[in-house]
Length: 262
Length: 88
Image 1 (cartoon, rainbow over the protein chains, first blue to last red):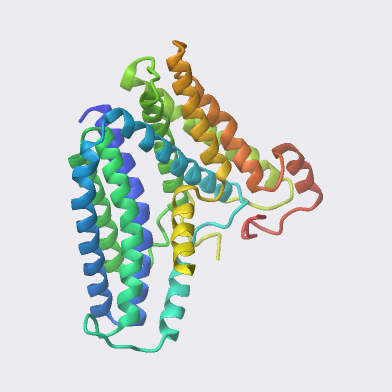
Image 2 (cartoon, chains in turn green, blue):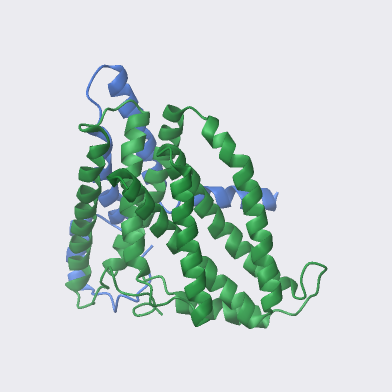
């Protein structure tokens, strides 16, 4: 596998794994608090809708001229990448509470338990169905976006889809094996890495789409990615000092979720 | 009407996110790159430069003020713990 293909696989795998962790938390809450059959039907229905979206958007994306696609996708990746990077830096430096899957799971669970049962034709429990459906559909939409944009730009939708599939299946299997939210996953570290990857690809593709020619062509990514990573780590250190001076103990980038916030 | 507003809010949140300045800066950066390219000037350096300006700026907005003044404020009034919610 070439360096560009490896970078594509890692970026898509990590981004989709983060989305899958969030979707799994919601489905586990829906199944545990309400009814597993309804939650399963909700997941199935969401996957069906996602399949229709992929079938509609997939061929359309491949017909867009590559230059225009790279500008639009580069801009979106930059916006998403900077959002993720910004949140990861704020969390790692102690300016924002860490994303806590256990806490979110408990919230979803409490809310789901508090709702009255309502049967429907589709599922024995309507609330469990809609909770699982919405969770999988919203997180799945992000996965679809990541696969289509990364894959189309790198002209390797197949590899992007395989990476997304591996991440989703792995997270779902682990989640359902332990029947608990994946609180030990170092989610902030993953978000930091994904933010760096999205931003790097966004800078590269956005620049190329707008007419820039990178020195060294694709090899420029090997400089852009570590440069943005170092910049992010540097900004984290600067922000950590602003909290650390006051006696707080900011989280480490790789600290598992659920250990700090809550 | 409220559904339409909710639909718009969903897409604004999905695409623009927490800080509109980031999205605006990126659009300007891409437009500037295209402008430099059209003018026959080497243009690859502009987007990394935009990033170097935009990320610290957005972070400083998130912690409610420029980075350096924030540091001095933090020493005077320390936050209770990293569990403290964002200041925004």
